[in-house]
Image (cartoon, protein in one colour):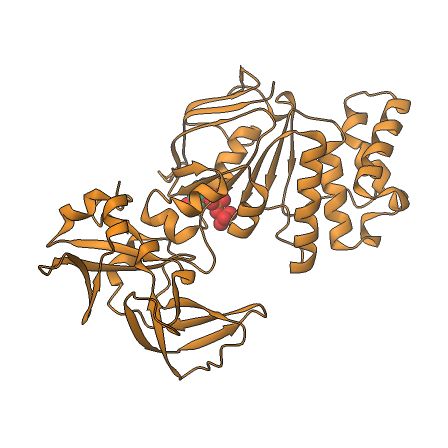
Length: 383
Ligand code: ATP
């Protein structure tokens, strides 16, 4: 069994930077887990500790039931794939693939068999006698992947392995990675800051911020039920629209006060989140996915919002309309992801053919039935 268990794992670098802070995470045998988070959140450091390339300041790491804290990398039965795939330039593809087997003393017939099989799986057979300089970026990355799988390690550790590839190749390699995982079922820990990669590859995603684990769960769960403002702003593209607003009780029921707007809180939300009532007279953070703000054609019954289009991004199948939010979000920006979440502009989803251009005035309908709510003090989602 190749489960990986991290208990209270902490890394403090000399100088006092706490890169990883008390991480508890159990990865089951055969699972593909993705570590995501903004730059500097500690993902690479955590992976490097599992690999044995970095000491652990505190906590334990187990691989396959064995505490590995004091084991050197080569005794951990792991294989790592990095962003810069570091192939040996003077060796052929075949020699690159077989290298790790040869240094372990594997006999030649066995090396040839495993290299042949790996090359077949990765479509590298016609390239076996080439040197890395004569390969494309995607082919080199496939060789790097091959070097990892050739030994059949218990665990793959991958640190942004696709980030040097162009967009199209990245999509192709993503598919390849999924296929390899289905074929071999090897426990995989994959680091990326790209949440599309995380959503498409992971059986589960672990979101990190400032060295702390924010939430761990299947992609759909993180999207549908983010535990706090950080995860809400980080998972989903374009990012969730977030604003701090006041909850007012205007006699007819609760409403959200955003600038001059009063948006009645639907009964369905109160039924779902009874604790919303306790926010009457206080501030709350409201979150709306772009798809919950649509052009107001027809009568949706929900609140309306007239905005000026700051930018319109056409994505072919749909459009993103970016506009100034209806109230100040200064506070919420400081709560959410610094680089990828909490846009200062809000985004609405428009149909591909919507005749909207920058500068146009657009009437939008807001679906508060699909809104998210967070406590501004704790930043946690409302129960
Ligand atoms: P990125 O996506 O930018 O690679 P990351 O999430 O992988 O970021 P880490 O590389 O793990 O982040 O770094 C976490 C924190 O630890 C950062 O604040 C970083 O500056 C710090 N750090 C990393 N390596 C060292 C080191 N050798 N010495 C001191 N501080 C370090």
